[in-house]
Image 1: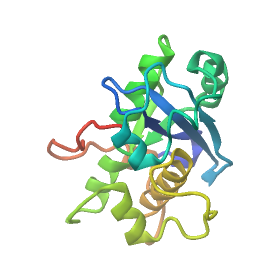
Image 2: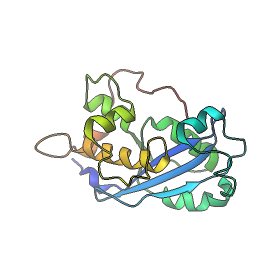
Image 3: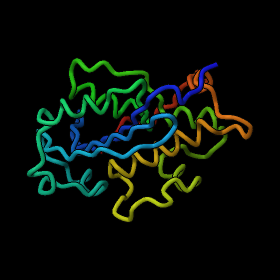
Length: 197
């Protein structure tokens, strides 16, 4: 049995421009090393296509806000350095991973832990597994800076990191093993709709 803290992790959250396929306008990565959440790294990005109004209403990012932000190609090397971990964590991870794979081309995505799927498996019987509901249920945003708000990448990445730690430490007597974290989720349909704002 392997201690899950033996791996290095990076938690990611991407906010998009509302186009299809979505392009990112904000990216945050949060390291987890030796079971401890590190400092987030955040980028605003000027997308190739404008931010649609419905997306701006959700995350609050507008074309004006990102007008002077770099294009993704200008930060890609820095992003790759931050993503250099044994495993990647995200909530409803196929959305974030899909965007990163499109933007990074030859990027070799590491093992992925999806906190949506983990929560469905480890917290059965809940009415919803949306990130906001889990944050509220477990008070995962307590102590975060007041300028961090839901649907912005840094907030979402930090509460996802806290959710992962909570899920990894669910048993009262011991943390889960890495093998238990990797357990297959029963059934299908774990993914929420692949929307990215």
